[in-house]
Image (cartoon, rainbow, N blue to C red; front, side, top):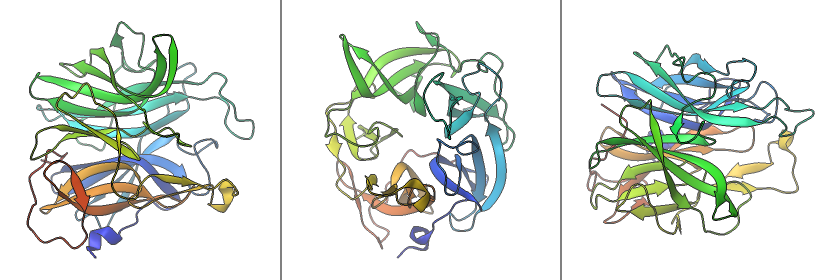
Length: 335
């Protein structure tokens, strides 16, 4: 087995969940939800900030700290939680981190959703180590034309060459034609990453019932052969020629996602566990090899792992111990 595929990484005392990887000046930088081992986002002190680690080889990691944290400011939409980061680099060299800001005043031991609010936030950096939230974004997150704010989470951003624009995907729920839809991936566009205009629903999930939201952790990229856009979700995927409109989902052709254990309790680490290549996946390329990153392990103890894959004519397949053939260049977050 590839050495990288044997990696299971989380900072000491923490677990990893939704994350992103970006390569810069010879180092992979990992930004992730920072969870406290044995706990969950419902517990005070867990999943309230973003951790930063780095590695030159995806095997040996160094924890650098927590550069983005909940603001703690009363009424701000990131008052209690900063989670689910995604980092891009602009043509001018500046980095932008998109993440979910949550206001959730009632965690355990009296957990409830009273007062809950969430939005998409953006922080900027010149070096990946020090981050600042622009003043205009700080109170309620990114502003979208026609809306006060994006009520969503798990942001993902790509550049659309054909239309010369940035596209922002995020998980949300809303009423459409008078009917409530719980599982949606919405999309917005921007020319400058500051002013956004909502385009609508990129995908309305139409699969089998899931215990967890099946539209969480969206990841979009172009297929290196067909040029079509692939929207990856935790259990499913969709392929489209149009990056703002994806057709009916298909189940991923390999073990993945989350399995829920109804008979267990969270503190035992058996409330749920990952399946196969895990969940909250990203696509990266390292030293000519393609990898899916994924969150692996059980509730309150998850770590980062990697799985090698190869591209097929229209999608991808898992194939450990690949040779060097069929290693197409792909658009990924590296220089």
